[in-house]
Image (cartoon, rainbow, N blue to C red):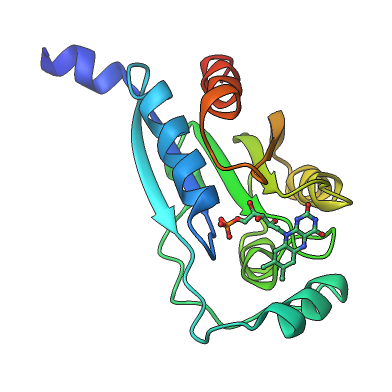
Length: 166
Ligand SMILES: Cc1cc2nc3c(=O)[nH]c(=O)nc-3n(C[C@H](O)[C@H](O)[C@H](O)COP(=O)(O)O)c2cc1C
């Protein structure tokens, strides 16, 4: 590719948390689907401690944060940010609450929300959309992927279709 073309390519940050790998798989699929248009950087949010199922669920409900490895990303360096998260107890999980608390400036960034859940996303998309708007970002779209029966077939097709709209 010519250097001029390279310069013109847009950049996408795919920032996600995943406890059991489903959101990771979905976000990799997003990355692959948009890689023709964007230079993609996949960044996983890693909590410093392992969060148990029940404690995690109640922390999520209360909107609590958890210590995570340093977030070395600056949304200002990207044209598109895709935030990927599972749903815990109808809410964003603590590591994603930490992301939303740490990053408060999305000025002029397009931000898409990709949520995975077993059966219902509850208030998760709404909470993240609120954060995008209050951080002066522009909501580029949102997708809920139901992962109860695995991440394959129709679910992946939906992910690819959504990704093409970004
Ligand atoms: C603590 C906890 C709470 C959960 N609560 C919900 C829920 O309220 N609704 C739902 O549909 N799925 C719920 N799930 C299922 C996950 O959202 C779903 O399996 C998700 O795709 C997992 O993503 P991951 O593999 O990237 O961690 C919960 C999972 C965990 C671990």
